[in-house]
Amino acid sequence: MTKDEKISRSETRIFKAVFPNTTNHYDTLFGGTAMQLMDEVAFITATRFSRQRMVTVSSDRIDFKKPIPAGTIIELVGRITYLGNTSLKVRVDIYIEQMYSDEREKAVSGEFTFVAIDENKQPVKIE
Image (tube, rainbow, N blue to C red; front, side):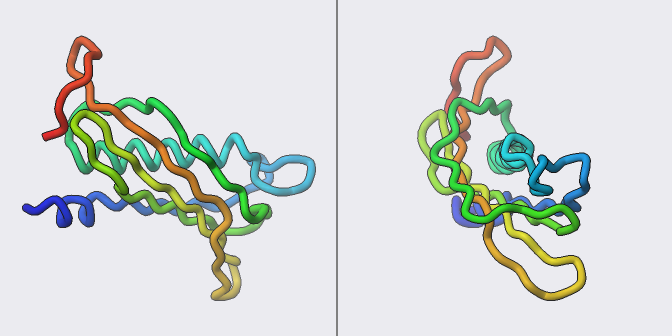
């Protein structure tokens, strides 16, 4: 399998409903909750690509472009954007979908860096 095929096959999409227990006093999704969901999708994407132990080492510039209201559906999409020796980067975008219409727009974007580790938690080459 080529690198591009592996990247394509590792793309990860997760859908969630935004319920009131995940929102702040403005009735929009907590930023920290969005970041947690993004890191989870990035981790799954990195693991599906490498099939190795992966750990988050950094998150780069998370842009909150639109508030995510309660009562919407969000789609998180993770995709490998960079592949190094022991590390890789995953871009995660969050899209808002209205529950009862076809409206869809990008709300949040960010990039997460992961390193492959061995059983002693030391960096190893991504195969």
